Length: 427
Image (cartoon, rainbow, N blue to C red):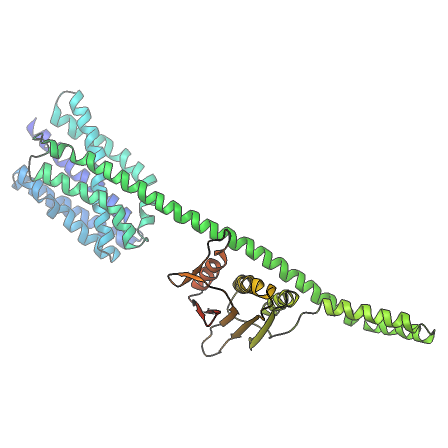
């Protein structure tokens, strides 16, 4: 009977090693190749053999104390060799150790109900190993492996609880008898950890939700602005196409005018000429550079500024193709020029001469687009170098500009000098 119990205990020890080792390897993606799988199973066989020798030669209490050095440390070295990492394999091992607790608890529950405590515990642990392993591999492993590619900060957040449990279990159950000694401090430690972890989770999740909400708001505003800008560009392109059609129809206009002159209808010819000129002028898109999108945007805002009595000074050169999407370029310039017009309108209404200066250039050696927009302004409040406004709905344009500029790996600055607001950016 003792020999059978010893055999079952050894088998259970080998099984839990395979259970934890396989989970650890899957958590850190160490079994993706045939070579890695071969090395892993060879290492597991050697570790199980070392456990068997240790169980037969060492006292069971001493064997439990050196277990981390016989199993966990070699397993960590193996996973380090297979993955090239230290931190995540270590977290994978302590996480698998934590999942082994479910296996042990089910066995303790059965041993508390059924006779033959030690034998029952080992038999139940053996019985539940395969089902639990399949469940963990199927449902838990994919979620854990996703965290492997997260920043170190996120990995540490994931590994904090397993590391605390690993240390707590060995300190209070293996190396000492504090857990079973009934000390209230020890008994209440893990509930305290669960409470603290839950509180941290709530705070962290709340902060992340606020960030996500803010990003969604920015994204919604960007989408709205892009849609508006796209519609405006489409309208300007249609106007440009209409101008082209007028030029194409010039021969027909001349024939009509010639007919009017031959019939002595000079006034009718004059009215017709005036109407054609007015229509063409209204649809004209000024050309500032070779880039079509920039021309359309600048032409639209120049017309708005002129109607408000604000002058626009546009200088620069830009090739037809730049490494910036038309939509992104439209959002940046539309927001910047919209803010400039908004700042100038109150001044222009009071009779103050206002000029919005727009400079843009694209040095070929740098591969970067540089833009500077200058406009008169009243007092501007800054927070951490960013202009802010207390008026509802304002400030989104600056956020949109910064978001797009950062996405292109560029930079932007906002400042005031001598009553002029200056925006400089490159992307």
